[in-house]
Length: 148
Image (cartoon, rainbow, N blue to C red; front, top):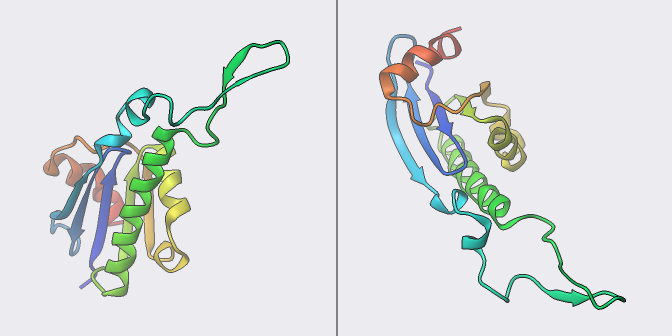
């Protein structure tokens, strides 16, 4: 029997499913919500503490920009949390193959946070946001990926 974990996510929520073979459907293993990835930049920072005001030679003030925006930082944190969970599952032998389904930007973040050993288990990736799909629709949409 070949067990495959299927991670269906976007930057604010994720569901992890187990598939135990062709025609076996998807069983929910775990789900996550990360609402901070959906917040507006202003809601993620407190006034005054996060930006520094400086005057230039003409006395004009401009805010120093973040190297990574607070929203992007939250997405990176969520991607790291998901990848830590998947790495632990790989080490425990909970799955043999992995399928990642996420919008392009978040899929890139997941790949950045994934260790080499977990990356070696990836059977397929889909650049799609199926996070709101019901399980029967997911089974239909992912059938060719799960059972090539």
